[in-house]
Amino acid sequence: MTSSQSPPPGAADRPRLTEAQKKENHIRSEQKRREAIRDGFDRLASIVPGMDGQGRSEAVVLEATLQHIREQINERQKLVEAAKAKGIDTTGWELSRETVTACESQQKRNESEQ
Image 1 (spheres, rainbow, N blue to C red):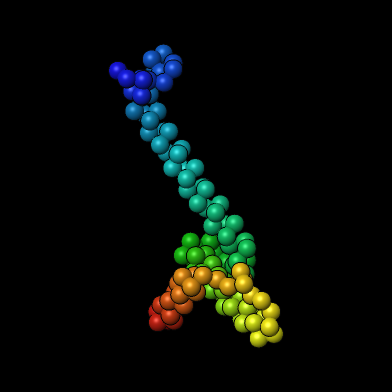
Image 2: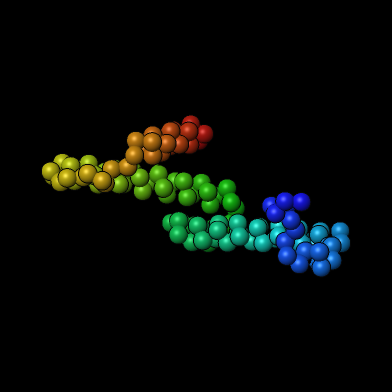
């Protein structure tokens, strides 16, 4: 057995887990994962305008988040254009072309679904 294949120190001394213990560990891990996802959606919903008091449907939170991001991107583009019109150097302020294109295509897709 090579050193990369050797068991961790003390592994031989530990008893093997029963199937019930393995199942319980798996259930606990899955519950932690779901709780982390729920917490993430709750945090997201708390910072997206208009989500206060709304249900916590993940689809609703994601759609509202996308809409908020699109609005923020559009507002930023308007501010950059206004600054340019006033002769202000906007180097470093502009979003990447990929970001703008993704926002526009998402907006078109959203409009066509309505």
